[in-house]
Length: 166
Image 1 (cartoon, rainbow, N blue to C red):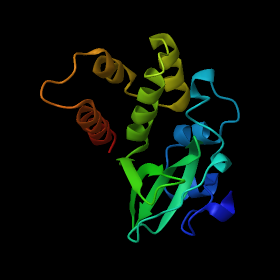
Image 2 (tube, rainbow, N blue to C red):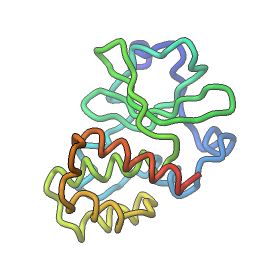
Image 3 (tube, one colour):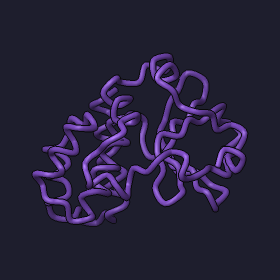
């Protein structure tokens, strides 16, 4: 699928992870061969998809994993990292978070929406190095925020995780 990727898409390696100061537990998760079943549909082999568009201001992107042919990415702009989704069939990009913890919050919420029991979510969070599982469970099990859409509340939650992780 490499020939379908945008030219700014480059392979992610442990050396790149180290150079970007990516947390080792996150890198171990990305490079894990075996993961719990709950990750199966959400964290697929990185070569199962591609990214067709990268904005001009982004210097390079590193794919971490795929979900239904769409890549989850590290976006590099100067010395700033962010994390997002590159679409295989849409000339757009979605920025999800500013930290690995924010990205993992997004991933664990996706898994939770698949009706995975809390105990299994806790195991998944421990496996991938996500440190805010109690806050995440309170967020998803709590009442919907009044006057705020779920998507806006999710963005705010991830921003809060990013702020605690910076």
